[in-house]
Length: 262
Image (cartoon, rainbow, N blue to C red; front, side, top):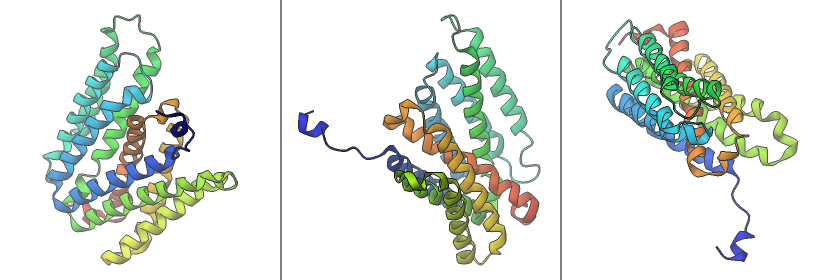
């Protein structure tokens, strides 16, 4: 690298994360519109990508073991809902999540490095599994038209909230980023409701909740020194989309039960 190129300003990490969020949203949105099976496949791929970069993003000890646990646990979580065609949608999810968490603890027994940062290692792997578990909750609503639009509303809210992160380049606006994320998420989801002919009030709830959760996930990961690198940025973006997966399912359960009929 020449001395002159080192003097060029670099694009802020938030722009890379925002672009990655939009890419993940597009992939999951198209998959949801196409077929529940394709959405499950996309989530399995997302779980593999999360596992691929999670240990590096959080600078965890025993990265290979962490990767193995997250990959196997993530695939188990996806499979626990992928072949369900009706209620109870989540009958196998608790078992898959419990076994995955047991594997996360068992993995520590086989470490030969003296087990430094044991608590951080276990809790970080469990967090990754929880994010994947949240993401797989997108699959049940994808079996109905209303459910698909709820998914699209949540994904659009995640993308809109990621776009508001760019406002953080102005110090005066940084205290308002959470409010901006919630407002942008709500607006994006309402637009989805109006375009699809659904009641906008329910989608407003989806958008505000999804925008807030997505923004919170990126805010938690933003201080990590590793976010100067491309792979951790992708992991942060993916995590901030997976975390909103519970929103369409819970809102459907409470306000749009027809979205979960299958």
